[in-house]
Length: 294
Picture 1 (cartoon, rainbow, N blue to C red):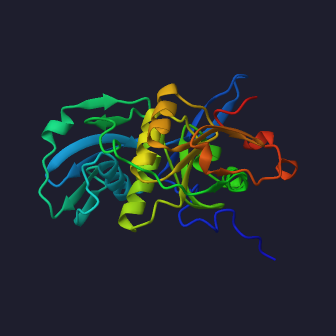
Picture 2 (spheres, rainbow, N blue to C red):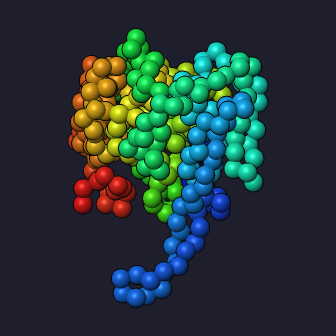
């Protein structure tokens, strides 16, 4: 009897067989023995909104349309009621152009640039807190049993991280079901790809959870909140500003989630403590990733 694939339940899962995302490289190890390993590719992608060049991002190169739409949406340059009339990706020129019915000009916003702590150097244009002043996130309950089920399934999923390392993953989830698993050299890119997928498929955000392998920084918190997702969880730790902003906007922020352990530093009122910890397994050593203790 054929066993179900570990990625079968996902709408989008990492494609570890995609030859364009990694490259075989040889070198010598600590004993002088020649070794050949997979390393993640890193390519520039220049994003245009209509005729205006917005940013060049370093990315692994999958889902460029989702990345472009999600980046523009999370920067407040692509509005919720904007009609997208076309998305043109040129693999040879390494560009993607998002076209809208509305005429756009973000020259002033582009002049206000913030370099963030994201891997592959994240960039935020304009006021980082723009659009969050009057934001109210939905009070969607979050069962702790869902968190453990998600962590277990995501940690068992074949990924580019397990194949080659040097990459971050972010997963869009609903209750105890992971839906869309994106990876990239920068965790902000992975989130933007999810945002783009949600925007192009008109996906409701109020009942979703975002799970990431990376740090819970201010940028991650802002992107999650601006997407309308009420909960963000991670295997890794927090930054102080990330916690401050999560508390300000009412986002449930859960970090250091490994095995039976986690800590919630914001939005704990959404949590329903239904999990029986005696039935939760500790994390196997082979599944531990960046941010895990030895």
